[in-house]
Amino acid sequence: WVVLSHCWGNKREGITTSRNITEREQRLEVDKLPVLFQDAIYITRRLGYKFIWIDSLCILQDSEADWRTESLKMAQYYGGSILNISASAAPDASTGIFESGDLNRENKVPAIKLECHSKVNDIRGSIYVRHSKQPEPDPTNWEAPLIRRAWAFQESILSPRVVSYDENHLRWDCKKVRCTEEIPEWPRNEDLLMKTPERVKIYALPPITDGRCHFKHALELDLSLRRFAWTWWYHVLNEYLHRDITFPNDRLPAIAGVAKEFAKRTGCTYVCGLWKEDLLNGLRWTPVAARDSKNGIKGPPTWSWAS
Image (cartoon, rainbow, N blue to C red; front, side):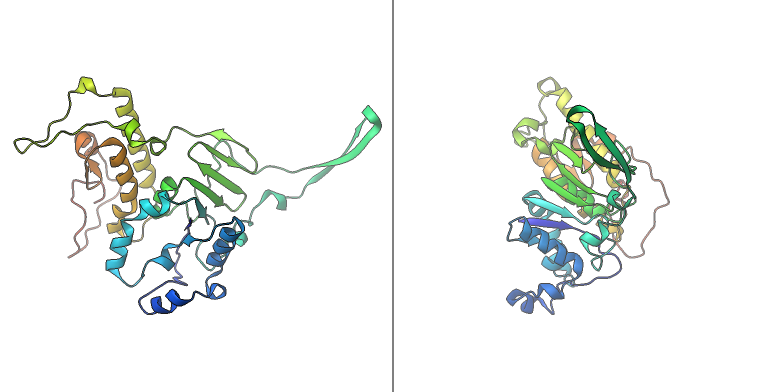
C-alpha cells in the first residue's frame, strides 16, 4: 500500500466521521474528495498500486478512542508501506499536489537560447540554459507547509521511500539515497532504521531479579554502536522539536512510532520521551520558551522535554 503525508490546514475537508463511515464503507466517491486526495489516488493508480492510506479518511475524526488506537499504529502504516506520497507544498487538502508542486519549478524560468556549431561533421543546433534556483547541498525547503508539521516528520522517517512534490521540483528519499531532478544522487548519512534489530542491539536485558534490572557489563557492549544510536536519536529529536504542532499534548504521540522502532533496534526502555539507559543525558534539555500551563489539562511530566 501507499501512504499520504499532507497538511490539514484550517480546512478539514473530506474527513471521515461517525456520521459518514457507514456510507464510505459501501462506496467512496473519489470525484467528491478534496483535490489533493484525488491527486494522491491518481498517482497511486498510475504507479500500479491498489491501496492508499490517508489519515483523515482512515481515522474517525470525531472519535478520540479511534484516534488513540490508530495513532499507535503509525509505525505499522508508514513503515510497512511501499511508498509515501508527500504533498510538501500544499497548505491544505483543497490545494492539489500537482498544482502546488508546480509553483516555482525551474522550467518556468525563462531559458536562454544558445546557438551551437561543431566543426566535426558540421553539426548545428541549439541548447537552452536557465538559472538554477536550487540551493545546495540540501534541497529541503524548510518553509514548505508540510516540512513544518511535526506529525509529518515521523511519517517521513518511518517510510521506506518518499516522493515529495515540492514547489520547485520532485524529490526522492529512501534509506540509501536522496535525489532531485537537478541533483541525481548523493548518499545519505547512516540511518539507524536501516539496521535490523539484530545488528543494533545495545543492551541485552536479563530477567529481573530482586526487583531490579541488571545490565550487561559495559565491556560487553559495542561502544561505537551505542554512541551512534544515541547521536542519531538526539539529532532526530532536535529536528523534530523545531516542527509545529497544533495540540501540545500530541508531542509524544507524534514521535511514538520512531521511538517504538528505536526501542526495537536497541532494546532500550522508553520513558515519556527519554530513555532509561541514557536518562542523565536525556534530562539535559533546555526550554526555549516559557511553559504554557493548561488549567485542568494533564500533560507530560515536567521532567520530560515534551512538557
